[in-house]
Length: 497
Image (cartoon, rainbow, N blue to C red):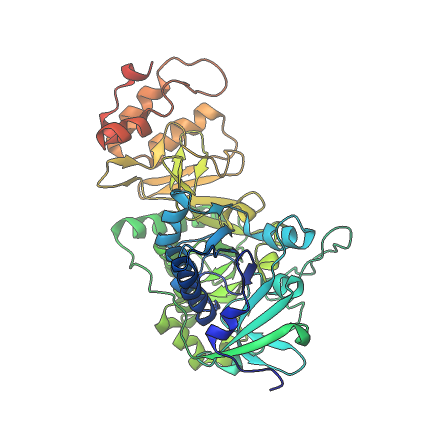
């Protein structure tokens, strides 16, 4: 190898206070680990000396603890974008220790290339193989790697031997140029490959290679419970009805799915439903349920940005890698999350809400309207542009003291105009073609928990005139009551009129 092998500490030593770094990966898959851990330790040493040491940080999406967690605990982050799921970083964001700007994931590469966002000084890429002329074989995810490798002044490679070199061929690296050089992205089928199986970087930018042997920091998902299984069954039954009505073709449509236990339960229910044929997946995150359904031939092909799998599921893929490379492709997020492709393929998008209101607006990012949870991620890239946009949520949280169906959401991420279907464990509300009052009636009837149906109907009976049944004094009564008593069921409408 022509490139110098260096330690993680040596690599971190190149990075200075105020620098901006970009990392490969998407979720905790495909992320560098050793260099960022060394960088956090360096920041702690500098802080002990009384010196300022903070960096700007761009990633594809969330990361593992070895990026967001260690850097947040070391108070080494000046700003962060576009998405995160670290408890320590979330705490730092909500306590205003750094600046965090939430973005639709498809937008980040374009905004970086435009120069609107700070240009990265360093790109840190996790790879399983590297050639002397700068061909990088990434590991279990792509994320923003093409954009940051192109824009950064310097590149550090973490050569991770945990991931086999045989991953070569699973990636499809094709990046989108900014206007006016933009052209049509030539994908018309989920399985189309349009780019290169490697990331070509300028070899003169590579300042060192750090050798590691570390697995992804992805944990196993929480197993399905009775509520998530009911949500999954409701989604699958609804899609079956749509097929019988001719609104979904008998060959089905490609599926985009969010991340987590609800998403896995929905995919499992779809894959087990007698009326739903084997289908394709076009999404950001390929998770355990997809692999399990591939093993049962219920999923035919999956296109994504990352293999966000438990250790067991990833070992399943790696043990039969030649076979899986025929059924999986990993793309940059400018492609996996492209609204253009989502519209062309006619996706069914299934994502998770923190809360939804009786008008159909969805909050997917903020608790009580102010505290950031994770971020909008890719849900906005898809929900406005797909054939069918579905949002799922348990009807309640915190021992039923919080209703996920409220008079008005405390933060709007997806408006009533983009949300077509709401699903809880109690049922499905199809909002297409309905007026605001009609939407309110069906959401209360089909999706609200019985403890809250009466209260929501009382809200509608407050006598508000106009097209949209808002009562500006009472629309946040659920939230304000919870803050006061810890139980939304304690609401008294007289207090808010």
